[in-house]
Image 1 (tube, rainbow, N blue to C red):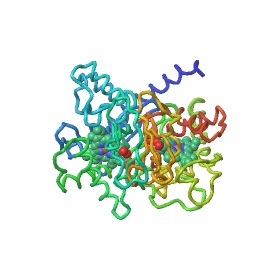
Image 2 (image 1 turned 30 degrees about the horizontal axis):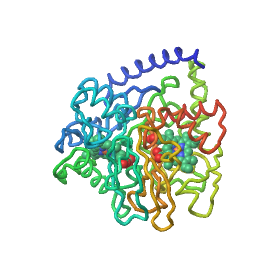
Image 3 (image 1 turned 90 degrees about the vertical axis):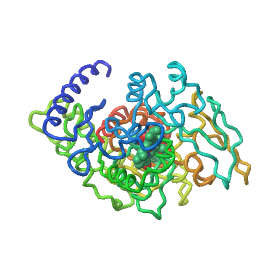
Image 4 (image 1 turned 135 degrees about the horizontal axis):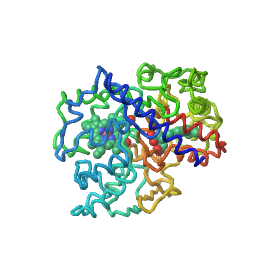
Length: 441
Ligand code: HEC
Ligand code: HEC
């Protein structure tokens, strides 16, 4: 395996350069390189306009929506983009603001070294500190907060979360990792306006909300963005004999997939049909991506102990697949908007650099620990502990690391997590195929 790496990288680089220059010269928008190939964003209209309020400082700390949602990072940001910005500005760019950029808002940031330490989680995992209280009428109380940075309390827990992409939004059933700003009584555009107003008074420390006009423009802009991997470094264009890339995604219907066992992804079924002039490496990579898609849709996984899934509907064990949860056509969000606990907040995953919380159920006295209780801090319900939304799987290669806390550095780590969590026992080939498929989304 190791000996083939340099060869793959050479091929990758050659097709990056070829692909990028050919497309950039003839049209906008321009594909952005990532470790697996190229990703492309298309916007409503012919080009991505950077004149609108999404790119303007609307608050008091210099931040814009674009401080945390970057096209080249799949409309999120990554440790690489943050580290480059830190290096070029000595950690003074508006991304580095104590309100929610540093490990604690009180951290001393007076020297470069102190800033390096104060922003260590943002720089290493590309996470933002979301501060939320235990709701007033919650069914539980916080009995202790272990916060290595000395800030968290029941008034404000420190929850370190990855920015979700501000693209492909028409496919979202639920907004935010914990489903806040997702009032089902509202149209998606209205929920997105509330979200953008909150981001301005929160992240950007605005003293007032943006004007209704500005909110409408922000939402129209982000709703118009479709982002996906467009070119695999080895397999080539992902819309050649296949339905990868943003144009096919934009045309995907948002209505639910029919049938009890959804097959959300039908992009690469014909991808490995022989093509004149294809190299053996290209053919092999195309087969791998096609196999990965089939595994995602059909490989059996015994799903146990997933709050939100196996504790409702009377089936404690569910024979499913990756697609049971990632069910919506074209994106793999949950097509019924379920929030669930697959174990990312479990105290078994505690790290010395992350806060750990202990809660007691006020009625039963039951005690549990969590790294981030997710949905429960919005609803106050014990049954919602550690539940998060099922995120979209498009454009993944551009925006590592993964899971709400950035705890999986690579897609290999994601697949290994599932292998262990549900004792799937994937073969080496199956793991490679799943990773190749996820990289091609
Ligand atoms: C300081 C970084 C930061 C800034 C600035 C920022 N965001 Fe975000 N954004 C985040 C984080 C972190 C999340 C996920 C938080 C969570 O789920 O708890 C997020 C989530 C979102 C989502 C939800 C996507 C989904 O799939 O649910 C949208 C939409 C969004 N942001 C748009 C915006 C807009 C519009 C602005 C400007 C008004 C903005 N953001 C400014 C960090 C930021
Ligand atoms: C029981 C439901 C369930 C199953 C089965 C499942 N997922 Fe997930 N998946 C989730 C949830 C929920 C999250 C978000 C978890 C979090 O961050 O707290 C997630 C997150 C992910 C992410 C990270 C996305 C991001 O933006 O960070 C990837 C990639 C992923 N899943 C791929 C897969 C693959 C591949 C399989 C099959 C091997 C699979 N999932 C099976 C529910 C599921």
